[in-house]
Length: 114
Length: 115
Image 1 (cartoon, rainbow over the protein chains, first blue to last red):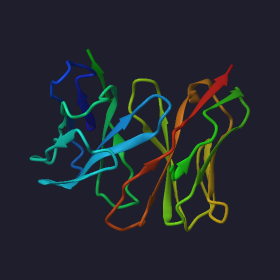
Image 2: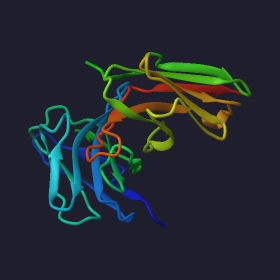
Image 3: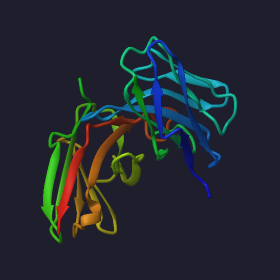
C-alpha cells in the first residue's frame, strides 16, 4: 500500500529540547516537503528536498533542520531555537519538484510544548 | 504579504445546493493552481488543479474556474454533500513545467454542508 507515513501522531517537547519528526514515503517520489500549519493559517513551507542529499530552506526554516540521506525518508528536527514550535506539521512528496507536480500529504504530526 | 488569499474563512451550504469557494492571488507569475481538501487532524488531499492555459477544469462534482485577468479562481461543488464538509485550501505555483514547484497556500475556507 503506497503512501506517506508520519510518526508520531502526537509529540510532546520539553523546553530546550530537540525533537525529530519522521516522514517516510514508498511512492518513489524524488521531492519531499515539510509544512507547518497553525490555527486559521495556511500551510507554510519549512524545508524542501528535490533529490537525495539535497535540501533547501523554505519560508520559515529558522529553528528547524532536515536531512535527506535516503529517498524514502525526510526527517524534520525541531530545535530549541524554534521559539514557537506548537503546530501541526505536515510532510508531503511529489514525483518531481516541477510546478505541475501534485503534492501528496501524510497524516501529520501535532507537536505540543510542555 | 499574502500572495494567495481566501477571504472567506467559512461557508455554510445546504445539501444538494452549489458550494462556491473563492481564491484570489496577487502574483501574476503564478501559472498553476490546485485545490486541496483537509479533514481535521489529517493531511490535505489533492482535489483538482488547473493550469493558466485553461479557464475551466472539471472532475465529477468539482469544477475549478480560472479568471487570469482578475487573478481569481473558484471551486464549484455541485451538488454539495455532507461528506464535503472540510477545510479547502487553494494553492498556487509558478514556472509550470519548470524545476521549481513550491506551492503557496491560502489560509483555507471551512465548508459546512448541512443535511
